[in-house]
Length: 244
Image 1: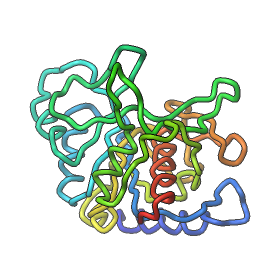
Image 2: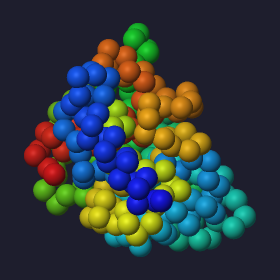
Image 3: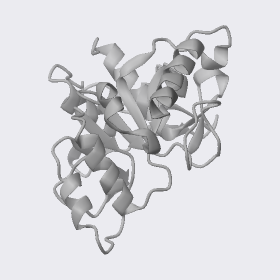
Image 4: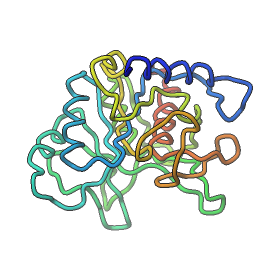
């Protein structure tokens, strides 16, 4: 059953990628970025999911979640998040740096920019300034761990336009409920983005609810989950430097 479901996800992606329906059009179906939905999992369940993903040997895991306060039973999660191949986001708000309470984690500045005039996400940050420090963005930190050849240009403008590849059809996407050993080929040595794609992700339509969803410049205002937008940011950076 799970094998059939994963096969169906790929058939849907390939069928919709580049189809005549512009809503589903992709520049290029990307197989280097695997997006996994954690839905409404609690912290212990997220820890178990990270263990399962790590057992499949990803190159890097970008974990799009803020753990603001410590909770009882976090010891397992603390140990997992300290892994060298996990990146968490932080928020730079003026002179304040807001990040998960965990120590010893690799982190990058939240990089999606909402255009207040258009109410769309169309740009991202390469880095953020915090006091006298330069904090590389979440996507840059992920890509540095993925590729030894990637070199961000921190001397240029910190703002860049997103070169959208497309919506969920344009990446390998799965719900946490179907991650097991048959998904190994799509996680091993890949970038894994672990984020929110609804209570339970279904590829049909890409979006089931408006939580953590933004309008984008793709197809003149198409909505995407922020995790899918982050996949497009990674696609943009990889395309710029010819990284597969």
